[in-house]
Figure 1: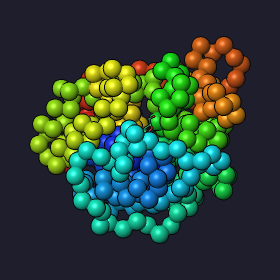
Figure 2: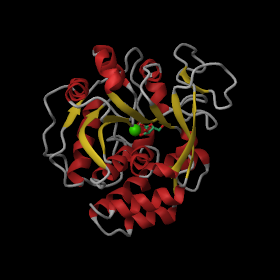
Figure 3: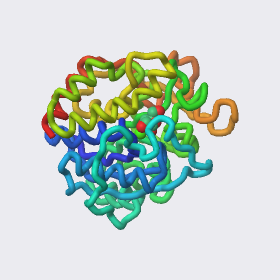
Figure 4: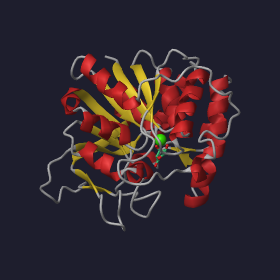
Length: 312
Ligand code: RIB
Ligand code: CA
């Protein structure tokens, strides 16, 4: 049974690979549209990068929308130090010629959920949750119509990557994340606890390059750029390939294991703002609200990525 999804994204090299994996898997995933959000880089670049990636995949039919250009309450924080000035540094890719849709990304999310049968659309946020939270606030009637939210964000055992206690997507817009985790929608969380076990080592990136098509070459070049920050910071063998965990889950959920637990977001403390407080050991009586993933079959993950990217 294929999933019908909206990808909400802030490309970002890892977002790009997540989008490419989805587009390479039409038997499992139907991409209804892509909504860009400000995050890794400002909105003007994330919407442009989403179009660049779809053109790289030869999918100029995909509808791409610009969403929110700043968090609900906080000033925008970006991550050019990780992703480069364009947000898609690494490969040399042509500027997009495919159009950006006129409608606002939030309106597209609302209209799609109202038009499609309840429980048939999965939201796949790969960046700050601003668009999702704005859609829920503007149209509460759509909340109960969402099949599932499968997101990349948060951390528990891995704690933070942008502050000592917070993961970037949640930290940029903690108020939006709080609204999403409290929404009652089934949420599956690909946190740093999982993505930090999915490192693009040299052999894995060589396998991307050895695919021999322009997608494999572009992904390998993205990783060559993207990995330098994490390798230097963590001294690891490669960079975590965060966002494709979301689309890989839709194709092969068995690659992941986790627990259905309570997750709440810190929205006020200056010290721990954006922290996802995951009750992994169930020490509170707070009701479970998220499937919080903890492990990944990383060899299986990279085998899936390499096999699917070769199809584009
Ligand atoms: O913390 C990792 C997340 O932040 C990923 O989604 C990456 O693309 C950035 O958005
Ligand atoms: Ca992202």
